[in-house]
Length: 535
Image 1 (cartoon, one colour):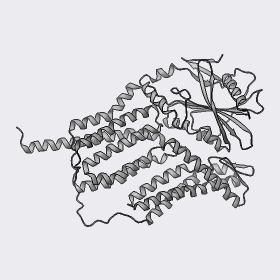
Image 2 (spheres, helix red, strand yellow):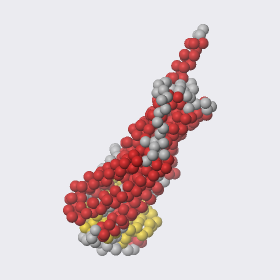
Image 3 (cartoon, one colour):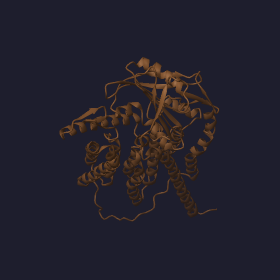
Image 4 (cartoon, rainbow, N blue to C red):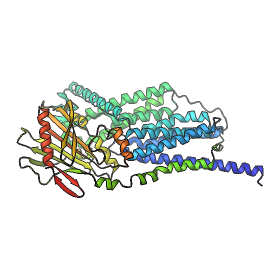
C-alpha cells in the first residue's frame, strides 16, 4: 500500500506528464498549420513577411510566460470548462486542417484553423499560469493572425484602391516635375514611354509588412494604446509615401534610362523603400510613451509553472487529435490520382491546328512576365482569323501541382487585376460563356475592356483544375460550397491551368461567337491517355 507522500508524488508526476503531452499536441497542431501557411509565403507573394511572424510571436509571448512562472499561479476557473475549450479548439482545428487539404489557399479554413489554435493555446496558458498571464498573452497570440492571408474580398479592394491612389499621385507629381505624364488605368504614360503595373505598384506588400511590424513594435516596447494606434496609422501613411517615392523613382528611371535601367533597379528600389519605411516606423515608435512599469525590486526568482490539472489519459487524447489529420488525409484522399485520370481534360493544340483559316504565331514571353506569372509551362499565341480585323491573343499556361507555392499564382492574375495593370478599363462583365466540346464544357468568364488606345477588347478567361472544372470566382479558387463538396467527395488537386483569350471587338455577341469557334478549333480533349478533337 502506497503512502500519502507516494500518492502525492505520483499525482504530481501524472500532472506533469499531462502538461507535456498537451504542449506536444499544441506544438504538432501549430506545426501542421504553419506548414500549410508557408505555401502562401513564397518570394512572389505579398505575404512573404510571414516567415518573421512565428519568431516575433514567440518573442512577445516568452516574457509573459516567464512572468507567469514567477507568480507561480494557476487558474481557479473550473477545470472542465478550460479543458472543454482546449479540446473543442483542437477538434475544430482538425476539421479546418482537412478542409485546407482541398485547397491550401482557401482563406476560410486558414482563419478557422488559426482562431481555434489560438483559443486552445490561450486556454492552456490560463490553466497553467492564471488569468493575469492569460490576459497579457492574448495580444501576442492574436498577433500571430498577421501571418494569415487577408480575406480575399478585403485584399482585392485594398490592392485596387492603393494601386489607383499611388498611380494617380505619381502622375500628378511627374507633371509638377515637368514631365507630360498621363494616367491610363493603372499605367503611367510619359510621352512614348509607359510605366506598367509593376512599376506603379500598389504597395500592398509594404502595407501588410509595416502594419505587422507596427503591431509588434507597439507590443514589444509596451506602448500605450494611443501610441499603438498612432503607430499603425503611421504604417499606413508610410506605405503610401514610400511607395509613391518608389513609383516616382522607377518612372524617372524608365524615362531617362529605358527598360534595362528599370529592370536593374526595380527590386533594389523596392527593398530600399521597404527598409526606409521600417526604419522610420521604429524611429516613431521609440519616441512614443511606454506603459511598462520599471521593476520595483521584487524577486526575479523563477519557479516552475503549476502542472496542468488534466489527467494523462485526456492529454493523450489531445495528442491523438493532433495526429488525426495525418491518418485521415492519407486514407481520405488515397484515390485522388485515379479520380483525376478518369476525367476528361483539355489542352491547347500547339503543333497542328485543325482549321486552315486560322493563322497562329507563338510569341516569346518576356522573362519579367514569366517571373510574375510563375507558371510551370506557358505559351502566348497570336491568332489571325478571317473574321477578325486585328489578331486575337491566347495565353495558355499552367501549374503541374508539384509546387503548391506556384499553384498560388494561378489565383493572383485575374483579368480584372492584370488588364487594369495594362491600362485597360473594365466596362462590363458579361454572362459566362460555356463552350460545349461534346465530351466537355469549358466555362469562360467574359470581361469587356476598353484599351488605352480607345479600342475595345473582349476577354475570355478560364482557370481550370481537376475538381471544379473552371468554376472559379475568387482568388481562393472556387465557390465555398464547391470546396466543401470536394472534401466530402474525397477530391483534392493542386494542378491548375489558365486560358485567356483576348478578341478585339466592339460587339460582345460577335466576340462570343468567335471565341467559341477559336476554342473548338484550338482545344484538344484528353481521357485515359488518348487525345481527340471536338467534332
